[in-house]
Image (tube, rainbow, N blue to C red; front, side):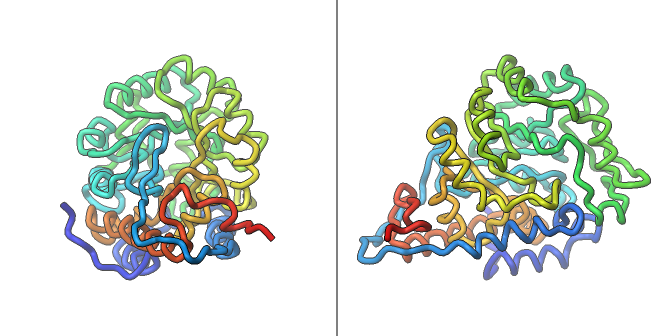
Length: 362
């Protein structure tokens, strides 16, 4: 079990992480594209959503559990895929997945993991999904799918909003490259593991070499033809694209703008969530990421149509601040805040987080 790290809130955890991370690592984790307006917009948009709480409801017992694609989770908060955890802590993704398991929730492993997928799944006590990029080399993509299937991952989360990497100016300034001793462990068999220095950002050069900018919806159909794992599509901000994903056979949608790291002019995810939920109904399960910083934000997202939320940067802050204990602290803060917000909103269960909390009847 992790040793508790006592933090007041996620903002305090962020400050701890900032003090402990190198400039290169902090800028990589915290930055967004261009002027970084979308990073701020994701958070600010949650503040604009009010919760019209119910009163005189028995909330003496609260049940935070939910189910996502058949996986029972202890709370509707899961770990988003984020790259290079060993930039933050020597135990990297192992610390993060162990903390997710302790919290009884889902962990989504990034393709750009600094720990091999086999080792991450072996350390897990909860479900692990794998975030996937479709490469120009489809054979390399298929080999990776086979590898993550064999490792025991239970779903594929295909990122579709990165035909090219967004221009993250802090990474450009730092000429971002993985430090010696770290590499992308899930692609070593194909020789694609090195994110090295370049005249711009090493990661941008890596993406330009490997990712397929010609990707179309046929890629989802192709992926479904080579795997029995459920396929989720991550990076959706439009209702018509959500419908296309469902038509292509996606089991789930992740409403996401890549944490504001791709197109700086992207809308906030909470703003587009309700129209996407209305567009696809029960056709696929919906997750959302981007800007969740308080437990009440979770209620807002679920009321507007999400099954659960994914958190990324807060997990990295916890990892930097205290390894596994820090990630446990990040998830624990959100769980405690969510439990209190449920009581104050008159919500004894996740099922009672309905649309009328944000759009009350007149």
